[in-house]
Image (cartoon, rainbow, N blue to C red; front, side, top):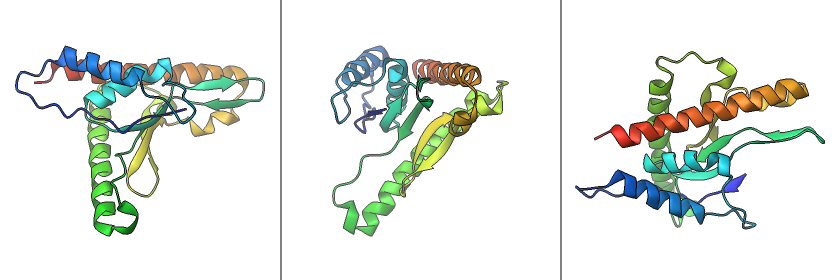
Length: 183
């Protein structure tokens, strides 16, 4: 798991160069680390970049890990959570604005998922979905079967793990293609 800065794409210049902006996001992601100084997992970096390019605030991610020795695992995920507004703890209006911003990001992600799955046949357990986290509208994007993967035998777990990583990568490619083709 990696903690990320809540970063989004806010450039609105008329002659905006998407390739240059993508490279800028890529460089910025190279400098993000978690609380113990570890960088973002290589296998999820492109997903984080694609989400940032679409103005989604990532807060944590993981490419997924399986440890067969002690039967622990993490399936691939990205958490979307707008940065905490300063002074939110004692300000109901700031809490509501923060929640609204997170829900707007959730709505946008749902629209992307609807489009991604529109003509795609995918087993339900592999499909990416949204899991609410926290109290203020943040969410985690991950495959539907991620939580029950602990119940699987080692070979089944490995197969699901590969399928879940592939699904996240294909969604990432969809977001990247969408970014570079939209006006």
